[in-house]
Length: 619
Image (cartoon, rainbow, N blue to C red):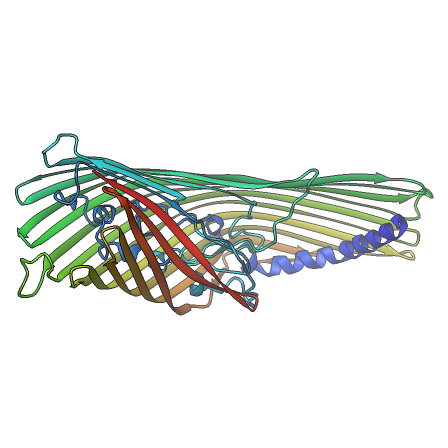
């Protein structure tokens, strides 16, 4: 068996030695897949970056943003306006805690013809969160990380006074198998799609029980401090937010073996990749609300955020194989490879927003507590980020084979050094409006309409210094042939991406009180999304020299343009919500929310039930 394995290995190595130069030549010619891809595309996006981390008690699948303004709840009111704390409904103490089922990751078996060109809208979990445009390609679908626990405490420090202070907290935590860099330079592994959901690994995770490691840990903490007071018809509120999010993990395997008895084989293989990411921000928001009348009010909100995100990757890959028979120079071969990659990304940015809200009873019975009410909520956000990236990639291989009348040897070297900087600017507008209708004295129905428009523009300029060298020589029956390739290049890559998206959602929410101890909730959210995306890279060859078997080609000053196909996609989906609130005793509410998610993969489909359990104490 070992002789057969040695023969097979010899055949493979001989084939690789001959094919290696051709592969290197093909890679050097296919610039659109390699050296024209900027390092910034390998940064792993996160929809929570540069955005306030607010506690949403109805943030279950498909209802996150739609619930803001649609459903009356103390924590949702604080998202509309930090001064929108109802003094009459909020008593001396309000406490809240919830526990949530994390989404299950399912394999996605889409194998499209162009993994670099597909931007799939249909994998989003919450269309209203769309912002981040990146390709989506087969493998394992990853869900965006959400808090697994949320808690809040609001209260009156001075009894009888209209002063309320409090805090909210959310915990993000997950352990999982390591997954590769989302969008590497010299390989294709996808990241989030433009809606912020579909991250895929692009390759099945592997384990080595004796010498391998494969793990990734994400942890985050979101804290918000609230304060509120009122004087007559004027209410003022403020919020201070802090967020810390860290990701770190590694994947590595190594193996070694040696055999003898008529032949000598030695093999060693080691592969280690480790990656970390750190994000933090601080944000401040102020709100003012004015009671226009006993049954209507209007408010204004202003806020700002400053944050930074850094990411680092280190990869090493070392291989060695040697084989030889007891009879010298009859069948000898060896293969060596060494690769090292070090990459770093830094992002610093700010966000600023302004919002308006209006709420009023309508109809002839406006002063009646059972009157229908109209609400309007608007928020406009501007985000500016500075992007920086650095990359050093070194890789070398050597192989040699001797088998009697035939012999071959080959070697290759790659040295890729890059430094880039750029900006990412974006804005978004969200307007939500709707009407709440009391149905009798026990039920209420709310119908809303939300419109989200967003645009994001990215411009990156990257300096790249490249060096490639490969050599092959093979001899058969005294005849020798050789091949030599060398490339040196100094390039400037200018990458521009423009993304526009518009999302309409029509949420319907209804509640009914079966008794003073049980309340049922039902929700339906219909979403329609449009995406328009352009992606272009211009490569300016400051100096580019290619030499193949003594023939030199120079491309100094030549510019090359690489355009991804323009993406125009739409998606329509419906989300459902069912819940029940139980009041086992006065001042205690236990809320259970259920949301069915229909999944389709590999010709099969199933329903995954996502649930939240929340506890509220009002005293």
